Amino acid sequence: MTLYLAEGSPTTELSDGQLREGLRSCFRQLGARRRVLALPPDFTRYNSRGGQLTCLVHEYFGDALTDVMPALGTHVPMADWQLEKMFPGLPKSLIRVHRWREDVITVGEVPADFVYEVTEGIWQRPWPAQVNKLVWEGGHDLILSIGQVVPHEVIGMANYNKNIFVGTGGSRGINESHFIGASYGMERMMGRADTPLRRILNYAQEQFCRHLPLVFVQTVVGANERGELVTRGLFIGDDHECFERAAELSVQVNFTVLREQLHKVVVYLDPEEFHSTWLGNKAIYRTRMAIADEGELIVLAPEVKTFGEDGEIDRLIRKYGYRTTPEIMRFMRENEDLRNNLSAAAHLIHGSSENRFRITYCPGHLSRAEIEGVGYRYERLDEVRQRYDPRQLHDGWNTLPDGERVFFIRNPALGLWAYEGRLR
Image 1 (cartoon, rainbow, N blue to C red):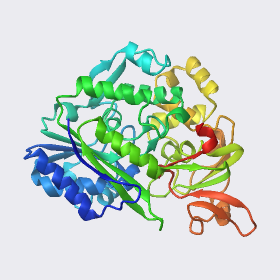
Image 2: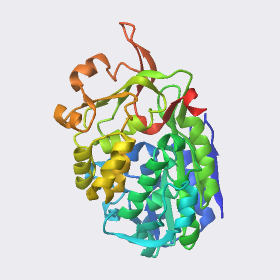
Image 3: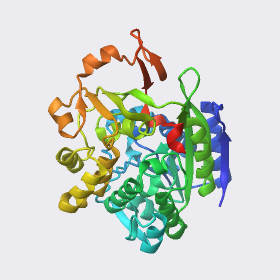
Image 4: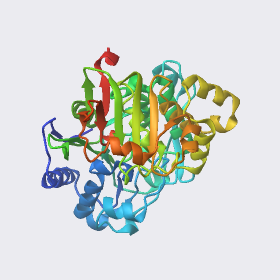
């Protein structure tokens, strides 16, 4: 097992040239390849540098890069404008769409006793390791899993083998993985590399995927003192050490520990990146450990126009709403449609404040009835934006002209925020 490159620090700013040379040095070590598959993130991870790295892969391998399959998970396929922006110059003929309900194969099952042990008895069934058939049967002599390591609500830290088993996984594996994470508890996992679900995926990788020519290309991205996004680290390897090194740096770069609780948080959802609460609720996941009891989270969501990325999940969110964990568990016991879509159930738990703080959504398209129907408070976007103007606010603490003090986050996907008292 090899760690090809581990470069970065909390103050590093890797240039485009350094990213190119980092990849090239790794590929020189790997030697000539004839059939390469790239698995980059989709547009919801635009800031990961995954698109840029994929283009550099194409620059190096040329025609040997035969397939590029964005790791969609349950997300909708990328639109043409997204492909053009994220992968400029990459031939569209290389793009393959991951269809998570049809194009997958179960390559093995993690034993129930192992799952029971690592989840502390929360899940007692074998977990199916599922991947897209192209990954398993494509005949590639190099598979590059590309993406960003950052705190994550389902598994603790995003990327590594999650990009394989969830990003290119199937409905049962994705559903159960999300529910395992939700049942175990977000606040017990976020910002941690060693979690129950990660141990399950590690088992699956070690037992079922050793023959696959997998190499992980992982970035750590953060903002510098000027508020610009920069690449803090690049880690390339084929084993767990690669991920652990990236996760250690991500915690330093992306995890903000606050000395006081936040009573009012304003989060902005970029119009290009966030079109659904399925994605936009990172505003909730990533701030919940920082918000005070009886506090308020205000979500400015100019292009949020639906709840689920998938039609069936959207229906389930509208039907059951973002309720407390006991309520969702009861709904599952009583309703087959929710039992059959555990990722939706997990998402509903993730998107609830458990009645601890208020969540106010200000969408550009969804109506008051729709927002209040799923359990959130509603305010008009244009009215709220007049008071909390993203163009005038900066990340972190802001004091308004009338003395009100609010904490502003421009992109919740890039970090995790927590009050130090909740980490003890």
